[in-house]
Length: 224
Length: 164
Image (cartoon, rainbow over all chains, first blue to last red; front, side):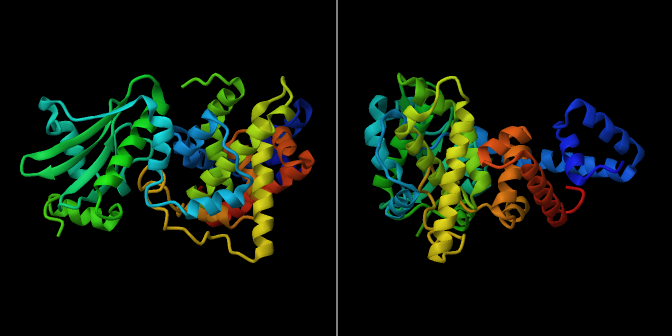
């Protein structure tokens, strides 16, 4: 008996009932060709699942979280897409007002005026385009202020904030931390508050990948 | 995060998986997040139709899959290509500069599959559903699902190289 490609696939996925599985297994055992087919089926399966796995650990989308908090009414996918087209370069500010109830945007404590070495190192080196999605500590975006400084919004497990480069290092211009919510919601909400502040400070849109790389090469100094 | 509404709370638990499924169906992440958003909205509106004791994940997956198919058909009618017109203009729109087009080998190979083959591959090989569960989500016989999976797999292997 020569099993069909469908049977071989079902065998590789563990989907055959006992009797059929035995018959197919015997045929596969006799055929190196079928064994290779099973192996490449399983290799593809592993490759695909590894490819999509990072999505599971990404921070939740603020829009999705907000929907689950209170039912907004939107009719269909087309209107969602139409609405998206109207969004400014940062969508977060509109959301921040509704979800950031427990968020405190506060001036930095004196000792934290400048980023500590670990954070400063990330701000010096890390490009948004190169970092791993879903990483616990991330740079959210980079921008130039109206008074001509490079600033970067960041998020770590403890807090989110904005740091701007000057002679003394990365000066912390504001931090946000959630006080009541736990986990990813807190992180998403404090990121939203930081994004709102970033938009208030920025002279233009966020830097793209090439602009970030150029800024890094210049030590994040003298944008103009 | 816990929500006082148990239905919304259950949706929240499913959210990462829904996002992954949407990413598998769509061509880019902004499209995927729109699909995910529309699905959450529809699920909340139709919550009374979900029967307690049945699997919420299959119910929502079916809903997302059907919305996606509707969207694909609507676009075909409008004569649009699959590449969304606003791609690239929404950089920074969702938590920074991470959202964007998926341009890896795997994404490109998946994008070339017919929808019915792609959904079969994604449901079984990424989402881990049995053939029977996947067939129920799609609404086709198990044998049909099985053969779509094989055709999709063969096309992917041909594009990605036999070594996968």
